[in-house]
Image 1 (cartoon, chains in turn purple, brown):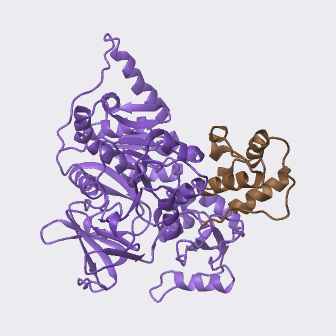
Image 2 (image 1 turned 90 degrees about the vertical axis):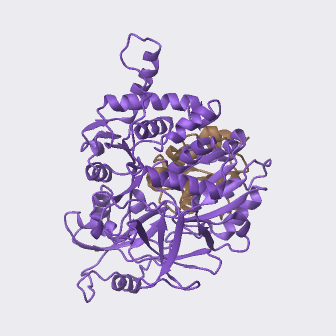
Image 3 (image 1 turned 45 degrees about the vertical axis):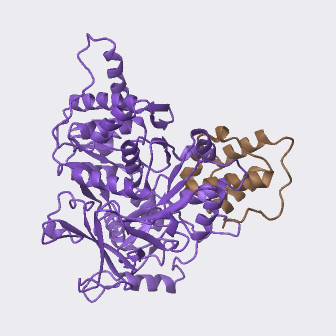
Length: 524
Length: 91
């Protein structure tokens, strides 16, 4: 079954229910379905066929969702890209996936066969609405559904891989549906739920909220940064019941709820990736009486791995829960042998939600994906963790190159690679920050001033990946293998008082302490 | 509270340098969490509640723009700036 059948079923079963509320107002499932029909027609007019990649680098609104559902229905591959990326970053993705159509800024999308500004696409999709009332016009909505195999690609989601530039995780229809169903088996979204999505839809955690809502007939409320001060009002006005969190959003809500308010209908918070501190989570659960918290773990390469039953949070606040149905977790040591409960090793996952590897990279070069005897892929997450005797997973840390910053998983090598593309920079080393709260430093060997490097780097990297501080060094220490020695660079910087352990200009009045940099997607 | 004093408050709460009072906060590098923290601190400081609709384009608001909104919502005049900033405890 194609992912688009989720919307088809929702149209049939809940035509009158509100599917989404964005800045323009509410849209029922019947209306969203009609928007998707028009988007499908519009996509075909752009020459998009089954299997073609459609890059969307615009805001997360009703046009995004119409194009998502429309693209999936005609068998095209939807590639959501954060609108905050630089033209250079978008261009990389557009070229890497050989996009047939890029919706977004003309410069970033120039590498696609066709490039259309998002506003123009939205306008033209609306034109189809009008022509429906004037049957003389040849353009009509498109109701056909393409024959889509379960292992055909539904989504390409770009994420920082093990080395170098972002790679596209290949998400087939089968795995996406398996993930949506398994997540909902654990979280239990209902038709009367109202889900507040203050996450970018280009982020898979945000995107799956739309899929989960379609599965259950729930309502998706799309909010963006500009509505932050009114978030509590949004929650009250729309009767929000479910809020997916990232740590910075948890803190924003905790700050906003300091004022006395009426009780809300919020029943469930979820979180994935970096977790809000227990103090913030405690404040939040107190501020929203009747709500519970489901802590989750996953990564784009397999979407979701585990969900903690909210009833277990009080007793196991550090756990990210048990594996979701259909997935299996094991912990392996450096020799790749499975470790017994209690021992810390790499988190390895196999099962129904493990995606089909990275786009355009031969499997033998994909160190994260390993073929199992039965032919399926096993994901080596690169994350360290342990299982307890009850099967509860505990996340311990990530391997050296991967860090999480502002909710964005990134490779230090990706930042170094970008810096080394700046003319005049001979070498760049990003030492691993001591923890998620530490500043991200970049040591560069160059004649350029740090500000010049930063200016040049800002053309290659989005704000989440820009270092907090750029320090010039005379020479790059190397390891025995001749690779830049990040640990030695870290020691060098520490000796000079640039160890990144302090928040720089933080003062006693920084009420968001201790985290100087929120862990969040770049746009949250 | 005059603009330079207000800029200083923005710098303290948001841990950024206000190079120009009219530069949007987002261009100064202020993220969403610190933007909300700033508004909460300003409300505490001035004893007012800002209308979310008056700050609908919050990320595009500048230090000067925020101070203008504060002044519009002040009943009489701005309180005299105190020596030290006070802010609600975060967590």
